[in-house]
Image (cartoon, rainbow, N blue to C red):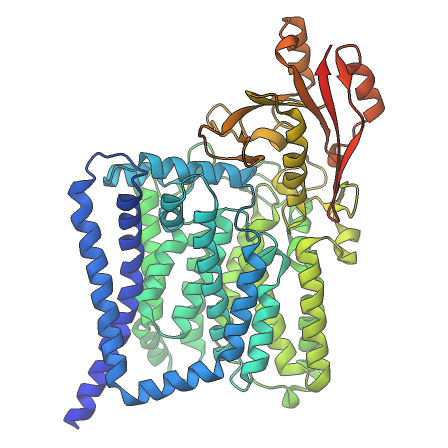
Length: 627
C-alpha cells in the first residue's frame, strides 16, 4: 500500500510540475527575449535580469521533474510509446497544417492588424522592465491585452517590425490549438478511431476563417486559440493550466470575460444536472468541482482589472466603451435586426458553414426519429456550447463593426459540433464522402471565394476576378478595410501594390496617386496614417521592393496623394517635386478610369495601362511623370 501511495503522489507531482512548467515558460520567455534582443529601453534592464534567469531556471527545473517522474513510471513510458505510434495521423495533419500556414508568415499587416502590430512593436520598444511600462504599453489599442500581447511579443523581440517573428509565435500557438482540438475530439468521440479523429481535426483546421485569416494579427484570433486551450485543460483536468489560460483569455479582449462567464455557467449547470443525485449532493458537487473555481477565478480576476481601470463597467478605453442600451447606436448594447441578421449569416452561412448547419439539423432530426440508433457523445461538448453560446449572444447584442473575425471561436465550436454529428449519425462511405468533400471545399474557400450561398447572401466587392464579400451591415459603410477579411483572398491587394510601387519609386520616396480621399481610401496604400493618434505608416524597402513596417537605410517614405491632396500640391506649385508617380485603380472602388485620366492629362505624362493579374484579383496602374 505504501508503494502505491508513493506512486500516486508521483503522478500528482508530475501533473502539477508539467502544468507549471508551461505556465512559467511564457513569462520566462518574455523577459529573456526582451533582455537578449536589446529592443526595449535600457532602464532597469540588468536589475531584472535576475527575474528572467530565475523564471527560466524554474521552467527548466519543473520540466526536468516532469521528465524524471515520467521516466520512473513504467506504465507512463509504455503509454507514451503507444501514443507516439497511434498518433501518427495527428502528426501528419500538424505537419500539413504548418506547411499551409507557413506561406503566410510574412504577409503585410494592414488596417486593424497593422495598428495592432504597430502597437505591439512600440510596446516592445518602450518596455523598460517595470510593471508600469508593462501595464501601459501592452494594452494594445485600448483593449485589455496584457495576456495576449506579451505572448506574441516573444517573437517580436527577436524580429522587430519584421512580422515573421510574431507570426512564428502565432504558428506555434495555432498548431498547439489544432493538437488540442484533436484531444478534445478524443474526449467527445470515445469510439472514434485515430484516423477519423485526424481527418475531423484537419477538416476543422481548414476552416476558411481559421486558415484563411491566420496571417491577420489581432486579439480575436488569439482569443479563439486561448479559448481552445481552456476547454482542453478543463476536459483533461489540468486546473492550473485552466486558470492560467482563463486569465489569458480575459486579458486578450473584452469578450474574454463573456466566454469565461459562459464556461462558469456551463460548469455549474453540468455539475448540477449531470447526475441524478439529491439536490444537496448536487450543490456540494458544484462547489467541489475545481474547474468551477478555476473558471470563476479568471472572471473575478478580470472584474478586479475592470475595477482598477475605472469601475466594474470599465471594460475598455473611455473612447470605446458605451455600457448602455441603444438600438440605433454603435459600440453599445442594443437589439438591431439588420445587425443580428448579418452576424447570424456570418456564423451559420459564410464560408460553407451552411454545410455544418445542414449536418447538425440532420442530426437533430435523426436523433428525434431514431434515438436508439444514434451513438452517444461525451457531455463535455456542453461546455463548448456554453462558451460559444455566451459569445454568440454577446456578438449579436453588442452593436459594433460586424466583422467576421469576431466569430472565430464560434466558428470552431460549430465545426467541432458538425464533425461530432457526422461521427455519431453517419457511417461508412457516406461519412468519408462528407469529410473529404468538406475538406476540399473549405481549402478552396480559404483562398478564394467560391461558396455559392455566401455569394448569394452577402454584398459583393469587385476584384477583377472572383468577387470578394463585404462583412458589415449592408446599410452602413465601413470602407473596404477589415470588412473584406474573412479568408485569404484580400491579400492579393498587397502583392499587387508592391508590384505597382516599383513604378512610383523616384529615389527618395514612392509617390502614389489614386482617386479617393487621401485619408480613408489612402489606408489601402501607406498605412492608417490619417489617424493622428496612431502614427502608423508603412515604408518602401527599395532593396526588397516591398512595403514594410520597419525603417532603415534601405527604406524610403510613401507619399499617398488622393484627389484633394493632389489639387493642393498643384495649387501650391509643388508638383515639380513629384518627378515620378504611379496611378493605381483598386477594383473595389470602381472609378471611371477614362474620366480620371482626363483630369490628370494636363499635369502628367501618362504611361501605358498596365495590369497586375492573379487568380484572386487584378489591379490596373499607370506610370506618371510631371510635365
